[in-house]
Length: 624
Image 1 (cartoon, rainbow, N blue to C red):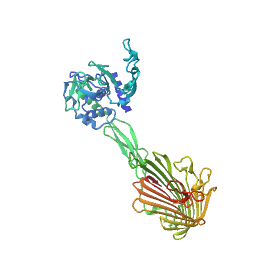
Image 2 (image 1 turned 135 degrees about the vertical axis):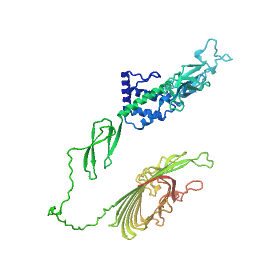
Image 3 (image 1 turned 45 degrees about the horizontal axis):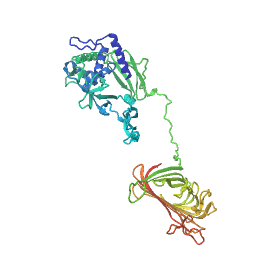
Image 4 (image 1 turned 90 degrees about the vertical axis):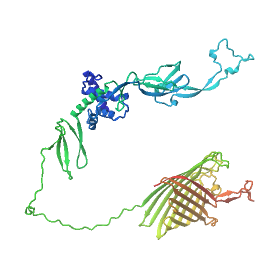
């Protein structure tokens, strides 16, 4: 674009220096165009929008390309323009032509806006509240009275009314190019301005639209021609002379670019320009990358000269008799060497990561059966690091899991409903087939504070309060790839509360005045993963513990099941069920009047109860 602008400026400067007359339009005077003046004349015709019926007409595009290629190569433009004869197009005088119309925006009966671009009224207009008094005190005269019919001061005259008024931003009107006018007694103040092309504005009879017409006599070309309105009767005759002048000029200095390809596909541009004495070096290469230099020249129109580089020597193979071969040439000695098998480098560690974000929403509005709107979320992150050594028949599985969820209701606000941090480490030594020795470590706790709602001022749990840790030693049986039975007859389990000053440890099965409960017993862990249907996966984890020393028949149960139904690559329907039963965690018993049941010794009666949690929702899941 910049070279075209510089060329246009240069041509304009040349035109002013040569004092050429390019705007003469008479039959008696044949224009004498130079190359710069012909360029300026055609440029004026192309830029005049009223001269064309269609701004995308092919003839207009050809004239533009002629202007562009006056200083650059062009090919088919010349053929298209040679087929045209603009001097044969008939031109007649006509009535003024409508060039543009703009809808008016009336603010009231006497004020309107002229908005050619159709801006939104929100950019310059706003509604404001204002106070209006029944009487304008600044305009009172001696004949006006402020008294009512009883001779008392009329208080209603000082009570304002609130009125909505429309306010215009005049600065915004100016910046947006919108003009404001007043209409009274068939007069417009200030008057409507002329169009950008000098067209005259006229208001329609219904005062809804302003129409712009061309001023003076309109010269119209024949309907079958690409031209519409021209500058004069002989405008197209002058255009034909200007086109012929530029076609002659471009024929004398036309040039074409040729791309020369080598064996590798690299392209070297070469311009064929009439009368150029310059030569260009070109490297010719074969498949062996041997190169040879050629000089390319363009001595005349449609001519190419090739010249070989000086000081180039060629060596060719020559056929000789066998007796001329050296006597020391003999066959080489060849023997095979022993090769060892390549042993693959073992990879002992394998890592995995699974993340799921679950959403669940309930919305109720005017629901006669009762209920409450809610919105809940749950984040489930699980990482795994596994060490496998097949030669030593050992496996070390380490997993860490963070599960945290919140729920928000209209009545009770936001609170947590899931909170768990689990660390599991298991070391296996394969003994025979599907059975091996196993040592396990398991720890479970929470991260954030928990409350017994609606009491949200006194926490009943927090980080490491309580926490559960289990150490087990036994064996593991794996009948299938995704089913595992881990039995640890020698297990130690401890439940601890570190901050007994702020957390009531008795709520978590720890005796009063103690910080931990210690148990010896048997732990059984059953894990499975099945796929009953396509895109459905069910994961189960069942953990059982029996205390040898205290009610061994009362078995602690911790069972969790996760069902994932895949929808697409990102989204799943996720169902999470979690059941816990701990005989040492007791709950108070209440009678029919919702009063605690008391024992004969005066203490409250407590029993162990099953704890159950369920969550279902739409899950966004990523697995690595």
